[in-house]
Length: 291
Image (tube, rainbow, N blue to C red; front, side, top):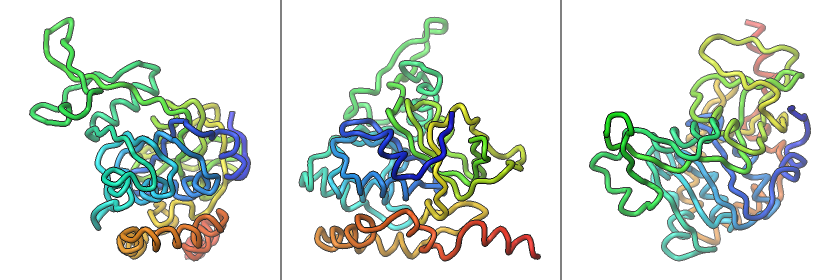
């Protein structure tokens, strides 16, 4: 049953050192505010899980939160490397980082298996690929019916999953529109889940090309307008491309990175996200209704 609370209180309720935690959002609805809240609490020895880890994981790794990363493709989208991730792998700064790399298909199947309470995911894939040479969790099995060789990977079942969504109604049902990614499965596979939303409304009005997470699948909901910035939230604000370009320079130097994190994350609260995007979701919706 969904509980409405502040993001900080939700993080306190679900997080502890050493847990496996996912922050999911594919291209948009990336839960930056949630990641920043976890960084401020200074949790350590986390196993981070994410398809396409981008700058939020660069920030978490650079601040010493993580000891392991389970992922498929890591990079600053449209720009280049994750420099803090690379520094952790190559130089163990600020701490050593273990990595377990998969394909997108493997991660998606592993989340779906976790959401179905299955111990592993079985699928066709990795034919001709070399990842299995460096990832001992990529196994091959034979179908008991056809004899066909298939791939198996462990299911993903995080202790905690964080996602961002457009809306929740007052009953705790959550609406996700646009590129859905793996957010639904991330919530359903996790022991605990926290969802930040742009706004809480009386009633959800949607269409077939959307997902509604029923209130009984979500543990905590926090209303945090702008929480996906600098990624975008369809219907609310655009992607801040300049922030991604700027991050490449910020993250290239350890001292500059640390100073930026202290100024922009460690000393800030979640309302900074609404200020960065320049408006509250409600204001934009009211302007739309005038036209």
